[in-house]
Image (cartoon, rainbow, N blue to C red; front, side, top):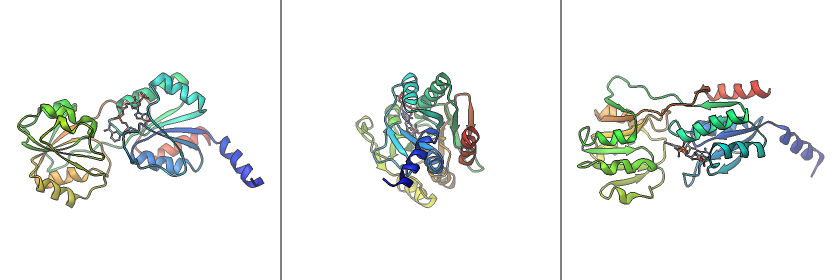
Length: 260
Ligand code: NAP
């Protein structure tokens, strides 16, 4: 190894270690930018078979084993700060991260994209959870398009007299729970014109969505507005108390203020 390479490696190890809880586009953006100054570990639950990843960071996959185990993992890996950039509906890991950071005395920031807001022409039925969403079928629509994540489809086994079209990134493991449903796969971003065509092709009259926010999957909402389709919109779970931003720039400023 050359002297320059040794110096560079030492400098790398001196950099503050940041744990990014990921699984979202903004987590990848944040990780790609944070790695210029910080020693980043990008953490995934391991749900998606071929996940998008940031470049030039360490990646760890799989649950920690709860909040106490996360405290141990962070100590063993000399973590100095945590950014929880998980999906708005990933409520358990958000709670665990908040508890673990409080226990360990580590700074934590939640990077959370803004919610979609209802617009003129939208016909949304807001519901608290997936079970409530399923209970509105078939009264809200007899041919429903579900894009709620493959882990969530079991709630729709109770939706009788409703034709279901289910889209997920990877095929669900439990398709047998909805024997009459049509399953399709797809990963955003989607275009509005493609979403309109898809909803028309399947003669959809109700769309079930989580209020995920962000651009990558918004086209279905715009398409539903265009076609006058009812949207059963699942509201977000509560966010643990603490610092929160929807801006990657602000999250980077937060890190720089901690370690700059
Ligand atoms: P969750 O219900 O909040 O978490 C369940 C458990 O999965 C956690 O307790 C934790 O296990 C593990 N886990 C979750 N996220 C993790 C991460 N980034 N790194 C390490 N372990 C993690 O989460 P989820 O809804 O299953 O989401 C899992 C992942 O998929 C997240 O990274 C999230 O950003 C992404 N995602 C979720 C959705 C959604 O709609 N929920 C949509 C798109 C992407 P232990 O308790 O064993 O530590």
